Image (cartoon, rainbow, N blue to C red; front, side):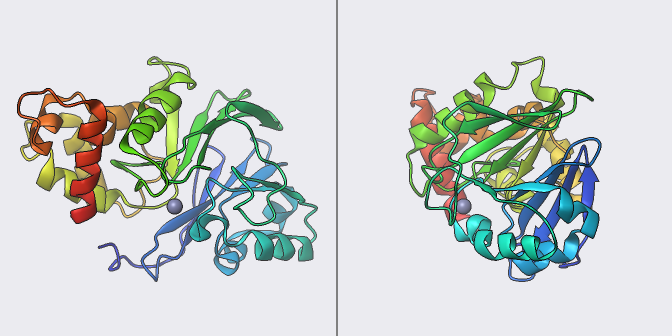
Length: 289
Ligand SMILES: [Zn+2]
């Protein structure tokens, strides 16, 4: 449904994150991300699946700072470029050797972090939060800049703006836990979620907004936060990094399983279903949309 988007290569830099468009011409609408320290001396290259598109978008100076290739999960459109990107980076004089991923299903992964493993990149503190469901090896990387206070989370195909990934290797219960327990429990609590910018693995916002307006929040009076997301998505092709975890909690139905409107729309008229049942039905409706 996003095939009509113009595949111009525009890099956007917010916080210390450069979003790199990949596979936009073929409808994949993926993002790779260059995450850098405030002084731009060290960086991580996240999900560089399409080596040519990624290399074209990196400057010589940026390439030299890359310390690791990092995957959010093993799918080819995220991890499929590990071997060729590592070689291309080395050819350009980069010393990178770390390949961080959730399992050996990511090619040449040599660092497999446990759940809640904490690591650092210069002054950036990074927590690896495992969120099994879309794949069993899915990891969300929660980043805090101890220098500037800025925060971000790279959610791969687990959390999208206004949506979530398909349950390829997991259950509705696991996705509920991933989104509504794991992601929330280790990210500083309610007073902090509005400071954490969300960077998903795909630009799926337009499609998600369309789904929500037609299946969940049908009326303008149903959810004011959703109206704002909808206006933004209608006016902007790139939405990654614009919204926070608190924003997602305010309009993303997959994070609002107890919302009466969400429950009624999936068919739970008595408000008696389990959260997993609501999650399952939402996903089923989205898959059919
Ligand atoms: Zn995936």
